[in-house]
Length: 291
Ligand SMILES: [Zn+2]
Image 1 (tube, rainbow, N blue to C red):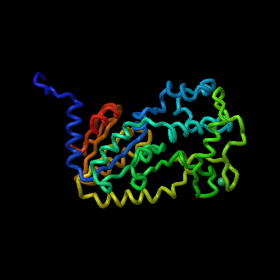
Image 2: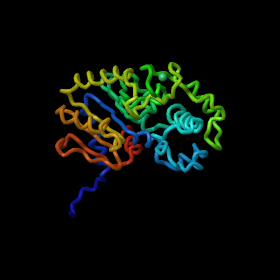
Image 3: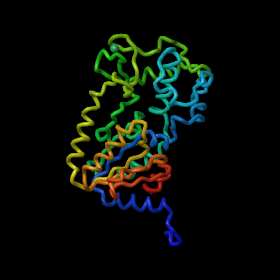
Image 4: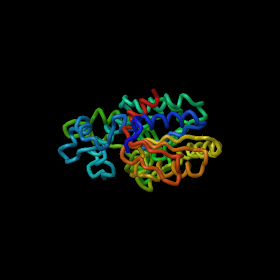
């Protein structure tokens, strides 16, 4: 125990990450909510919430995650909240250094050597310069709307309606001043919600081409030396990002998995030295890694 190496754990992690990046002929970037949290939007952050949604505090709501799954019992409040939530996280938030760092890392590879899969519905990868044709977002996108029923498989953008709702929101109550702005399905007149996977009503037809492109890309590169860098994907919905990354690494013998996760960095023992977990702040680690 007296001859411990003097390098810190972080230095070792970084050396390993640099080494794996140098050896890799494919880069598969996968991420969960932890990546956007590293960009400053943490759905559990009560200070962020109080700053952006002060009108919600009187209803006993303290954080963004508490609004996930809330039923629209009061539609003027429901859309007064959601329009502003989506406006903040999908359209106006402009500090996203961890995504910029990943974009720089990806820039050291050829375009066709990189693919992205994220459970985040905030569009940050595309907004920070990644090719949308090379991004798979299996959980949907806040920028799109769908019928709740759904009566049609169509999805549509709703930025103009969102802007009008944001303008009409009373910050003291978070309610829409004009209830006529509550969005409705243009086909059946029924309730709508963003095109995000929350239950069986989720429409994913338009996401399938990206899923197919990703599957084809993985098949092409299965025998190479791919590297998966997974950031901030914990156990909320592990079947979306975390477990597929482990399964791919298990199946593709030349691939490696670098998991960056401050709370759940553990990797399956059966992956041996081809998987490594880094239990550190993703933002700081990516900043140093992208150098
Ligand atoms: Zn409808």
